[in-house]
Length: 208
Image (tube, rainbow, N blue to C red; front, side):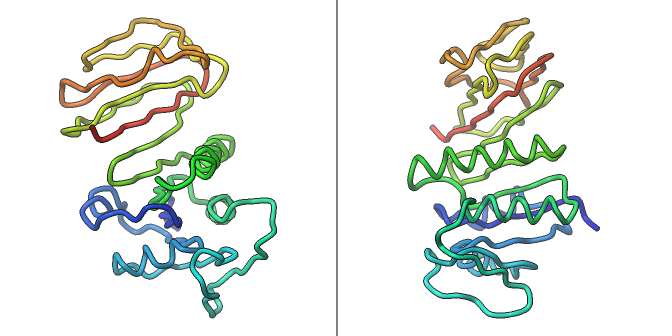
């Protein structure tokens, strides 16, 4: 079984160029609600389709379809994340989860938090955004022309934060969640290097 899982959600669609730049090989594919349309537009057949399908406008049929009522506790994306976790996947690539309503975007970031809680890792990928959450450790962020790089403390604070390979560097900084200190940095080398000893870091790459 592959560790990789692709999830198509019902937010802003992504271009074929963006999808093929980030898609992993041999991934299990889940389409959530209107994500069915996004998968089809990219020529991808989903292994599993699920949701309440209020956004898609019709209920797909078949053995690989899980149908839910509109009034439910979890969003369609959260349902997809839980299904991917239940199948043992560890690396999640989420497309179509940007744009639209702000409350949906906040909820989508909470889906990334659920992945971390379960020992998995996820990234939300759009044409103009890349969003990811990280536990304490060391990470690299490759240079992308025309993209900024911002960091936020998703937990109360992120301690011993070190950032290099960027316009603005940091050396053992404590980043608090009531701070905008990490907004709008720039990568000025092949990749930015980031490390921290405690907390959960939210990384956002946005097209300028």
